[in-house]
Image (cartoon, rainbow, N blue to C red):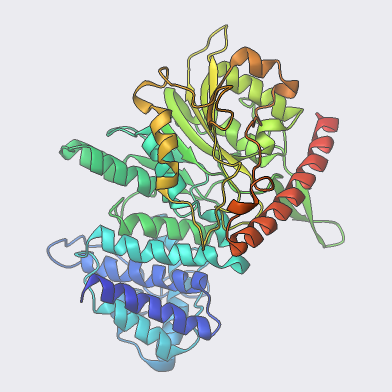
Length: 508
């Protein structure tokens, strides 16, 4: 079967099930369970002969039933009708109690396909292919396509876990990760940064055996607290030939912000979750659920705050080796918020070299109204004077129009930024902005200029909005409509942030 035929079949099943009320997310879950079982079965056969052991069916006390059937692919694929549905339900429950990667893949697993005939068709589709022999690019294309479709489904909320791949690849191209170096993402979602870094390292290096083994099993580490997203990340990695199906898990389900586990990494690539406040849900004395703002008591943090992004920024700084490099997507409030925000920015400028900020336009994320930036900084050893000397800002926001579907941002749109970023020698850069060229997008600001700004505000822009002045060159009406919605959403988000900032500053 050709690559296009396989992809077509997988997509067709997604559309059929969608008509039955099974969304892309639920379909993606079931594909993950079934692919894992099928690949494990293939790896148990020659030439791999891994001898992966799967448990027998378990009772209500999570104890294996002595004469119970084994929870594996051969048993599942041999079932039909009501027996198939019953076995599948019980198998998912039994596997969810296992330890290690097996347990992580099946944590909180449920059967979302109630029609046994349709479930059997998906099983037969997967059974006909040798997935372990299939190229990682084909498997990856299938799975990544499903992840993106799921992100487009705004009702599911999955878009918050999906960073535009063009942006990810741009960040990786600027960082230029090297072999035998460690990479972490404390909020890794479905693993987009890991896969882009993996592809970059493979494409730009002639790897020896040691480097290949390190890349496969030791390079990547991360956290993802949402069980369903974590399982998708693990499966995404396996399908791209990263990690071993029976190896140690490299994605933790723990909240990365709770504590510093002492691990240090060469690179941090991340897009922490949207939403400003960290909160936890608990039950009050009346038995009702209520949310409480959550501030992390970390001695290594510069400031205590319930602002989730500020906490992630502080945590990411703590994760870096002395020579470590970071590229992090963060919302505008991190650049201008007072109180804890100002304290964090000042310390970041002092203790790291915050050399670059990329201002992003709205309309590139599936979650609407997001105004975000990429902060690039290098960690440094202790010093009496500030490590940051100049901050270079690239304004790819003003007069830029993108929408996720009709005019998505491509890597080519950011090629100019990659060029002026000048990875090989960041200290030899040339501004494209000048008094004669006020619309130049690449501009330098000195440390003294920034420190002199109110609250050390890094939310800096200088390009005038030309949309009203140049009526002959307005974007397509559909693009304008989507942009208006984006701006309204962004305005509401900014208003909420201002109100929260006022509250934050009062507490600080």
